[in-house]
Each structure stands twice: as structure tokens, then as C-alpha cells.
Picture 1 (cartoon, rainbow, N blue to C red):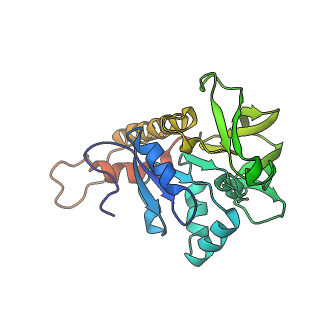
Picture 2: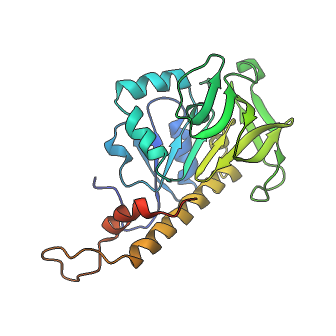
Picture 3: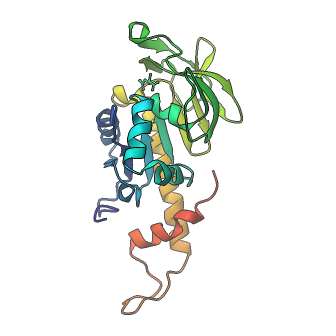
Length: 241
Ligand code: GLN
């Protein structure tokens, strides 16, 4: 892949682009100086600093993941320790249990979600959030569109609620929202994800710098790896978060 790293040093985030509002995510990330790549194949998952599962229709996404042979490769990427940001349908894909109706999911986030649990399109809108994290500024709101409702939470952090229900949760590198922060430029929740991506990338870079690269025939400066190679080699060494 030619675009794994470029000289400008900006992190590269893959956005699952089978269906849904992936272009809104790309614009929201671009506003923070992050490069994005639309992911439609297993190859597209290589060399990323972060991954976004957008909103849309989770049933359609499940079908297309199968059609494209992406279910398995995407599952591996999601479980690899890469920072992941999932909104709405994306959050449904990550959940441990899905209801209304029950459907397959990756089960990486210990939550139960009820699809369309806040009502249908008519009930969609922007709502005040009760914040439980000082990483988010007072007044942060959430736009809910046929949103899933979290009805049970296991071992994960609740960062914000709407009328008492968890709506923004985090487990290690996995950040998931019932709502759509990507629809507002400069939204604090997108900023939170970008910070996680930059930190993870710095950590991976620090590990890469500390691990001597193997000698390769013809290498002019043994021990100095090309940046993309070094980071790729160390992806599996990232500290557990
Ligand atoms: N209702 C959709 C689903 O169940 C999610 C809606 C959204 O992503 N905005 O998949």
C-alpha cells in the first residue's frame, strides 16, 4: 500500500465505507488534520493508526461485510488494540448483545443495545448530555438518529448519559457513541478519538525507536528502519490499553 505513511506525519484513520455516513466522519477527522482512507477491502485495513465504524444501517453493513469477505479481517483489526471509534450502527456492530431484533455482532464491547431504542426518525434530534468525564467540555450535546439504546453495561467506562442512560462508552481503545459527533465539525468526542489516535501512534513510534530493526541486505544504516516498517513491525507490541 503506497499511502500507509506519508512524509507529512499526519495519522491515517481508516473509515469503514460500505454504507452509512462515512464521508461525514472523514470530514470531521480532516478538520483535526487527520488523513483518512475509505476501507472496503481487507487490504485497506493495513497500516492504519485508527479505525472508524460509521453510522448507517447495521443489518446492511453486516450483509456487505459478508459480501466483501471483510467480517473476519475487520474483526481482527478491531481486536488488535487499534483506537476504534464507533457511532450508532457502528456501535451496534461492536456490542456484546444486540436486541430488537437480535443480530450478530463482534461482541468486543460489554454492552447490550436495543436497536432504534430511542424511537424512529420522528424522535431524532440533538439532546443535552450529562457528562461523566472531564475530557468533554460542559455543554457537549449529542445528535441521535434512530439511535440504539444501551440497556446494560458491563466492564467499561460510561463517559456521558442522556436522561440517565449511557450514550458514550469506552473500553480501552474502543470508543462508542449512540449519537453522531461526526455531524458537528470540531465536536469534542471526535477530538477525544483523535487524541487517542495520536497517543497510540506516539507510543508505537517510541517502541519502534527502541527496538533495533533487523539487518537487511543492502541496508545503508543497519538498525535504522524506514518509519513505516518500524511501526508496522511493532503494531503487535503496542501496550495493552
Ligand atoms: N437504526 C440503525 C440500526 O439499527 C442505526 C441508526 C444510525 O446509525 N443512525 O442499525
